[in-house]
Amino acid sequence: MWNVWLVVFFLCFAKIQCDDCPPIITRADWNASDPKEIKPLSINPPPYVLVHHSATQSCFTVEACKRLVKSIQNVHMNTNGWEDIGYNFLIGGDGSIYEGRGWGIHGAHAIKYNARSIGICLLGNFQEQTPPEIQTKSLNELVSCAKQTEKVEDQYHLIGHRQASATLCPGTFLFKIVQGLPQFDPHPQ
Ligand SMILES: *[C@@H]1O[C@H](CO)[C@@H](O)[C@H](O)[C@H]1NC(C)=O
Ligand SMILES: [Zn+2]
View 1 (tube, rainbow, N blue to C red):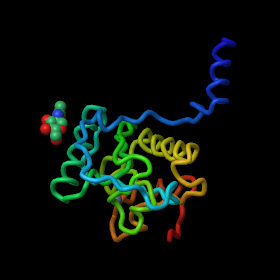
View 2: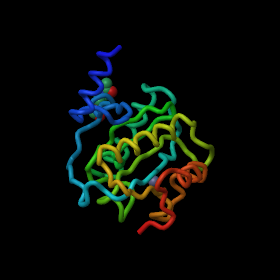
View 3: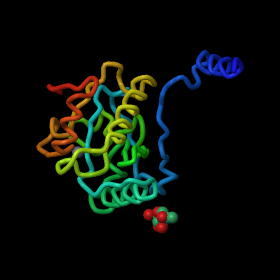
View 4: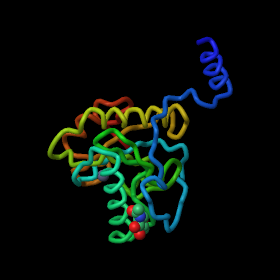
């Protein structure tokens, strides 16, 4: 047992792996198409975290969520003509997390915030029902990991998409939960 603690101590001391970051399913794992263009955020680490819903069906297995994420990328790239899937990350109804554009990359999810935020999309329609607890737990874990690893500002502001534009996103049920999360900002700028 002592040797396990020695390893943990060493890794923490070397700052290799002491953060509580959840596993993230990579682009290669969901068969992402390559982005047509990659632009960095203009403020990095960014001061905002924006929460979205996909306003689609939900998914409750990794296989189904991979297909849904891929289909969202197809719509964003082929129909909307964007350079990539709009969001930085996506989260399935089973709590699985998917890399979208990833950390530090300019998104296409909320005008005025794309250059200075991380956009996280919970898969499903939360205008109609509340998300499973495991899905919002993953949201919490991803945001807390972002803070710990300086992927967002320490004093980041968490907001729902409807605070940035005239939209129902992330849905009334999810927005209620967002309002109770750490560092929620009722008056974003
Ligand atoms: C991966 O994506 C490409 C491009 O969209 C598609 O042609 C191919 O069928 C996909 N492969 C799988 C295994 O889904
Ligand atoms: Zn949205």
